[in-house]
Image (cartoon, rainbow, N blue to C red; front, side):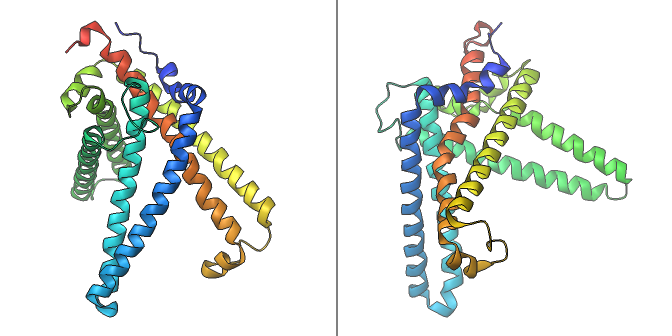
Amino acid sequence: MSAFSASDAALEGFQMLRTHWRVVVGWALFNLLALIAMIVITVILGVGIGLAAGVDQGSGAAGAIGGVAGGLVTALIETVLIVGVYRVMLRPGDPGFLHLRLGRDEGRLFLVGLILFCGVVLFAGLAVALGALLGNITFLGRIIAGVLALGVGGWLALRLGLAAPISFAERRIDFARSWRLTRGHGWPLLGMWFLNFCLVMLVWLALWLAVFVLSGLLTGFHGFASAEGGEALQSHPGRYLIEGVIPILCLPALLVISQAPWVSAYRSLAADPAEAL
């Protein structure tokens, strides 16, 4: 049997932060610069489309296109960072600045994420349609149906959760491989996910508490809650800057904490002789 440990896997991200903290700091700066560049490009794209189509007729479409482009670029940046986590843990000798590249590995993971996203949308649509068909059942019945839908969705997510690291480690998109590796390990994987989820939420809560305290100490706690929209931005620009920049800088660390357990699970389960290719 494999030596997979749910608790050890859930804490793998903190181990990586301890041993590769310089790399994670570099990723934080990369994320900030990349997102700034993305915002500039999105604004330029939106203005260009608006000018080409006319301010009155094309500005709304330009904003929508710019928003879609910004979302795709943001997803691509996160994909590059996640593959960086995989590269440090699985192939640290690969070339790349701060273990970051833009190539086939990133393309495969982006495609895996797109397939999983489409699967989630399809599953959610089926669940809503089923709920509409069962609209006449009791309130308790609807609750039971909702719990069952969440349970089935969570089970599928656990069984397919190794598809992302597999796409990097084995250089292929193979959801069936993830299904085989996770067979008989559902409860340990659930324990790993739950423990890691709690840790991520604690880190996220601590981060926002630190942001609130720091911004309050630097800009003052009074007057901010009563201000709204542009007035709040004009009266408290420092707070908006702090609340915008710090989460961006901390995102790579959160990605490490949340993604490293799945890589650790893959390494343990793939090393099991019973799961040989």
